[in-house]
Amino acid sequence: MVWRVIDPGTEPAGSATDLAHPDAVLFDLDGTLIDSRAAFVHAMNHALEAVGLSPRTAAELHGYLGPPIHETLTEHMRVPDELVEAIVAGYREHYAAHGAAETTVYPGIAELLKRLHGRTRLAVATSKPEPTAAQMLHELGLDAFFETICGPRLEATSEPKAATVGRTLKTLTQRAAVRRAVMVGDRLYDVIGAREHGLPTIGVLWGVGSEAELRAAGAAALVASPGALPALLGL
Image 1 (cartoon, rainbow, N blue to C red):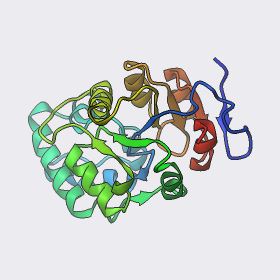
Image 2: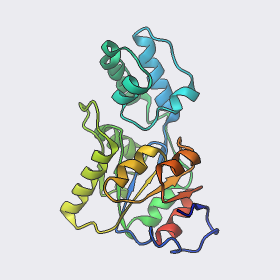
Image 3: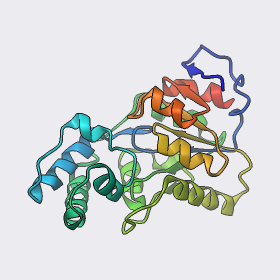
């Protein structure tokens, strides 16, 4: 595999033929479209302290952005099983009240979506609960760009990214066939989940995941800024 870290002007449009001219682009949400690190840290530490656990550092918690919250708590943070549901409830309550105010859209994302909108079909495939993701995108003024926003049900305790990607593709296909789709994300979960459906992934380097993580997972290409995506997609 030939690795490319691409920024505007460094590679001519359409030169990455394996990624060019998709009829659908699926975007991850956290770490790809929006910077929700502060909201995640504040909500998680609020919930941990509410059940008597010590807060975690921002640096530690940033590494847990990506998987569904139940998986984060049980498999990565190793919190006691009997406290998981209380932490989830506390986290979601705090996030609902403060999340949008503590979340920003990454520079260049709004311009990117305006450029792509109408040229290809756009969707969101996120591990954030679907109602939360839809509300967040609405509050940040991005929801109108997307044909569908897919995430786990609020009551789901676990959903692999591959399942979310599959449901996103199924929803799109119900309206019109999807013959060539590309995933855009910042974590290994995006790459692995998309690959199960035969989709290549463009890894973004402004989110939580590192270049090394994305390369090891098998991303087809890496981009250093949103402005590099249209040329890479041939759009």
